Length: 320
Image 1 (cartoon, rainbow, N blue to C red):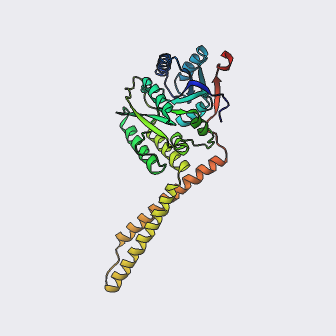
Image 2 (cartoon, one colour):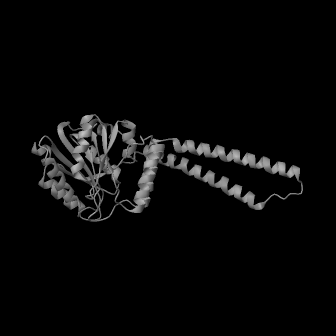
Image 3 (tube, one colour):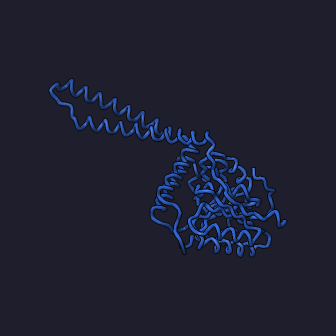
């Protein structure tokens, strides 16, 4: 559980930051301006620098020095977006928590429609982009990730899960109870509640910089999702193994019958090699899946950290 008291009508914005020195300040200013239009609410902003290669750390720590409602966190190395969110969740004090990116593409004006959905009874509200403005491989990755969460994590088909979402405080408090080395926020949310909604929002064009997600990082994210929160890949491996064994048995019977009916027939070298390659490939695939699970279990047993915080700037209690 978070060590902080829950403050009503306080919205906690959690923003993982990576190489965003050119965009993160405008995101901060937009949040402050948008919240000021709703006097009933107050804000706090938790900024997590995920070992950026530019001056992002200097920017967010400067803002935290100037504004006591802003908290700056600096990681000792790059741990990834989901670990950064986990670090931010441990610092939130608000009744509602909003997660968004640092690139300025998130429509800040849509924050309060998300909050309205929470006040109507939803536990989590996601922004659903009418048009996703990102690289082609990111679009493919998003589609694969959506299908994966449906099949492996039993995500409702009518819910679009994005990195722009708002949740009630009890949801976040449950999320941070997870202590594994490979956090996957989508899987944690689905494990906690299915009371989710999606509302349409318009994603903006990126004005500076580029996404920190490479194709390799997307693959690692998928592995986190299905190895930490589902055993269905293992069941799939069992099914494929049984199917391959059955196919091999049937193929063997066919070869025996053909040989009995026509003793002069020569068994084909090519077909034998094909079968061996197929069976060998299936075995290696299944061993890889099992090995992935075992490796991650081993790392978790060794208590590998989700993140390591090098420095924090938090003046909230000093100003109260």
